Image (tube, rainbow, N blue to C red; front, side):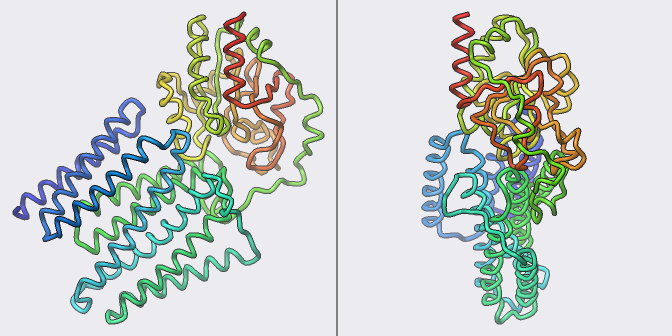
Length: 459
């Protein structure tokens, strides 16, 4: 195929990538956006295969193996495990960049390669290796692997800085010394793998939405750098889109947590001396039962449900859908308040609720649900903690001070469904649990919602 046709296919793929990314901005068009992105990638792969002399048998073998793995993951991975899968994909994207850039250095006459291409290859290896190890640590944390435990030690940040400096020096040597470029490259990759591991291993689970979006951005930047090294236009475009969108999303996540990216990566939330103890805060906690909650719901006209990671762990989204349908049949208005960092990846709650076929129009962002919270008769908090903690709004000395929250404490009655009074990631008690208008319903999220639905039917 002539270069002109190859370029035209690349252009069409780039347009579809951009259209697909735009479609992902809204729940109603997300499926179509995902499909457009898949078609764009298919066209890009076909154009690349037609532009070079590849071993068709090896390419077909790779396609068969990759498609088989993808089909198994698509059919067997639960929606509640989607954060782990996203982290895994980020890591594989980083590994691909490392291997492709390494193969580029081996296959070309490095003395004839421009320094800009060598620089791109070095950056691809550095960013890709950090993404690979960091993403697999994130995967292990999210999946609850016992071998992945938080590691913190004195001088850890200095060690990370030292590793970064070593990687940059080795990357510079890759560019400057063509005869030893491969040796320096793979040595840099090893140090970068260590850097990625140490960067993510000390980050807590509640910061995973930020970490995943950042690593997603890294995988895109690594792909874009690989595109510059190979001179592949569509790889540059696709990688740049992923990198830019990931950075924007990371910024949104940080704003939603009122924390800087540096604080997420290098800081740890610690309770301050001004934070009251759990014994002081939980003096007046009142518990409730499914029957009492059902009685309250029977006379309500407006209900807000605020899901958190506890809903994902309990896999309660389908039970929530059934309860929502029950309430709607009784002409009770039901909406969902979605906090930007609820769950373990950006949009985690949206994905789970959409998977349960809950109407997109009922999923409201934090600002929208807050504007009407004082009109809500009953707010049901399902497995959320820090994102509904009024300390963020009322206590300037709190570790989460200034963090935007969903103002459920302004509802007439609050039902908190939770296994216990254990703290969230911030490690501080939540005064909402002992507020005058709050009732605690202890238990597994799915079982609790099903019990409420049963009591509502019997009532």
